[in-house]
Image (spheres, rainbow, N blue to C red):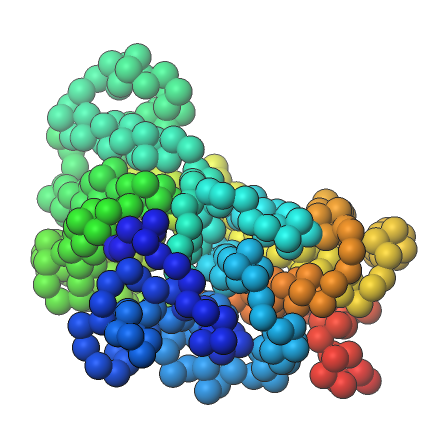
Length: 445
């Protein structure tokens, strides 16, 4: 990772709409362009190395050819704005890095709304996702004490394995009393753990060890090039499909428990087919837990909003044979995120249309959506208050598109489109969350 003090934006006339690019501060080591995961490495005429990426997240190099009419319209809006200043480019890049499944949501949305309204992003900005976040500026965490909490969990679990008394751990970590009590209750006596349970425990600790050493939520833990390379190396060791300590343990668990193949990159289709082939209900539940542990919160992303809930699920699964915890409301996080996304997307859509907030809220007061989107709508209008400019409208449209359509991959939408029931219910109630886009594209019925 290059020193951010040396990084600077490339001239705007070298950037196409829908993309951003920075100088790395290095001289190019090769001619032409090359792809590097989600960026393209190239150079200017003087041989200065450039990194370029799409600010429509999860568009990998070359996939821009598949951009639909909505993305193309937003890019046309950008092209009509003339040369953008650095503050505006920074806001646009930060909108692109926002991922709704990040644990900082919705704090990260409010930060962007404030930046759009004010015309400048505060620095250091919040780490808000995994799409080239903070490419040329400093970031801060939305998750204070996350690494400390992960260390506490690690100490409790290793303490349990060492047969330490529960009360001793509670005395040391009184703020973790609830977690400690649940852990010891679910797992029972350590000397009664089966061989498979011990292997599953070991597999779980590999991931937690990684999260103790570094965190995607804490930019400072991955600030240096050495720490980033070490994180990548450790992740490959844990989550590579066919080699490394993680795959080795997965294979051993599979063999001893008589389960289908377990690995971190299992597709949803493969998982369902393997699960279908298990007639024994206990083995089905065991397989669910093993695959969940192997995924490592989707392969080392401790920035996921469900990280700590997932870890508790692993512990419960190892101890009781069932991943689902009866005392926890299933789907609570999905419901929370869906409701938040709905409110923000609806607010942005109506702001773009030009509907006064007060009249919008009056109309919504006569409908039963099952939740109240007023708080998010209030934030949209309050932060965007002030002079209405083409730049502000374009940035608001970019944020609307991200929150509505964010996709991590074809099987995992992270935006509002993931919550189909909310969109269907809104349609039945006569509410459109894309009134503005339909109007500019001429899709009015």
